[in-house]
View 1: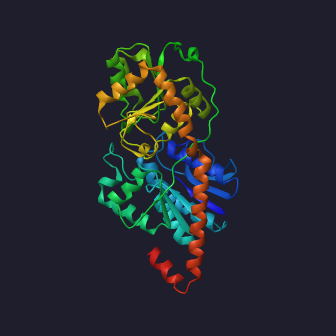
View 2: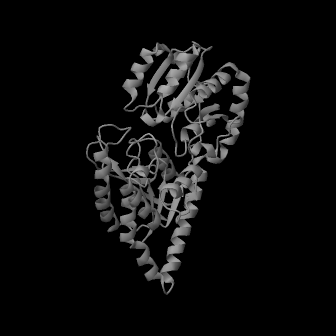
View 3: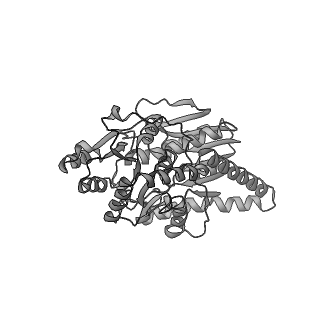
Length: 401
């Protein structure tokens, strides 16, 4: 197949959604021709060959951070990507388009698929449908809801990566679309636990770790408050990631008197991230919602119990009492207690860790790529059959209307 994948963010820009797209691309490119249409900022090249795929980046306005896009960069990506995509389609013949994120990327794949009369698989990732921490979350605004409803209904297939995301399609947008469920996947890591001394940590310390962009939705201040109240000076919190909330969180840790017990490690390479996970004892999160929760899988793959809230896609693979603990949303007292229970019980931590390394097996990226490949093939076959039927052209024109 000749596959066009559209995503407004792609490494090194963006967060987990871009990273998992890149991993999917790498797997698909082993067997197919893959082109990625994404955004360009800083000194990134306009076109490059990465992991067997052509990566084409279009310029956007007002992007000042690699980790997070600005509103101007999101809005400007759409016309720039459509224009570049149309030019691409004059020289390349694509069999299928896979569009990641209903907003802002959704209109790009929608327009290009209709122009080329090819199948469009729309992958929704959670935050593009529902983000309770943002006033501009699409589910709160009728204009965005209407836009997304149209994109969902015109797509040949819709993919949600968790039961929560699939449910939100029907809850907020349309019950006429039944998305396919394809869980996200992670690369199978090779982990060499980092040396604690390199990070100023002791062998007797109990290390909590959390990974993600430092944004309001992660509610990281809750973890700082829990650490301050615990009074257990053996416990250290390692924070991997950057974002707009970082300065405020650093100041909050100092205000609480726990600055020496929190390490803001910033953005790490994948290998260093896994090495840090490998030296930690417990994965913790206070995130208000995750469309899927790749970081929890990464923690499990590194042999860590996971303690987090029960709101989001992570409930597809996390089981309270078995993979760690799932806590009712914003029950900070219970979150603190569950963390403390695992801090003091090393035997329980090890039992859960061993279980998690077995449970994570079905969620490696090769399984995700295979499921997408089968869906692409089915979409191409269905469109081909429809075009050969006597009413095929009429059906096609009605769907594109």
